[in-house]
Image 1 (cartoon, rainbow, N blue to C red):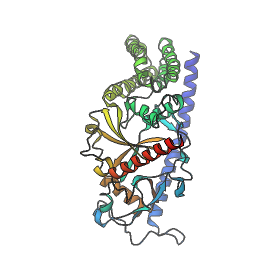
Image 2: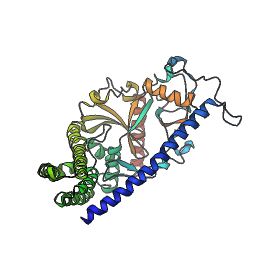
Image 3: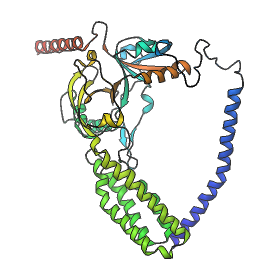
Length: 416
């Protein structure tokens, strides 16, 4: 009863703070809208930067053809220290961690990771021209971070550093793990996110037989989440906690039927809110995890490129393209073979972050054009300098790699 009394006191303070802040928030939002409208209606001041008169803003609902969209310019960044543009590109190996509750992957020291929107495999000083020409460039790719795969990569780097002496053994072991690389949470968040508000709502009911078990499950769930937060066991956390959670949810429904006639308005509201938490936990947690099971996959490395670029074959997640759309086809100049199947994936290790490289689409270039030309936002790209005018395709690059390997072996034999 003391717990119920304290919870009522805390609820009263929370509702008071909410009611006090709501008018202020409404006034602040209204004032922000008035200021935005005034700024849009007023002419620009002499000290404000002027918009380029040669680039008119297109009317709403229309856009010029890609051949007429000129003026885009992206500055170069490189991972080559001799280039002079990579002084602050610090590797992020070992900087990632997985949140126990949300399941999100967090990377520390993100300020050291330079911002870029495109990965260029061709060596050039800048990217510019019309969008019609750029969309045909086979060397430009859109980087898509593989967050969970990067966390596994860093985990292997820290804990199994001596597991293999091969140059790319850590990447190969990280790609060999089965996980979901598709967008979305895939039910990987902890049930504690639903159990904590559920415990608060159950306190409204004034039933210790319901409150005590959920508090114990919160404590045990957090402890178990901490113990299973590894690359080998994180996938089984929901499965391990499902039997006690489901048993408690059934007990809650039975208890609701037994005490339905004696519940007050506050108790009925608490029961209803707790049932909403049950629905969220089961529908958006367990059911989503089961439905996402078919999206688990791992990768086999088909060929190794310079600059830590890998052509891989995806094993699993056969319906990935059907659910999330086509990811594009890499040109034969880059991959060295044709056709490019839907199971093939181009993966790069960029500053310690595993990224999938997808060919740029027309919609991607239209978005970059609006950012760079229409809204005057400076954009940059990362050049990996794998192809040049002397090495324009996969065969010429592999010939140089083979020649370099033989030269090093000959020098090593002579020195030995």
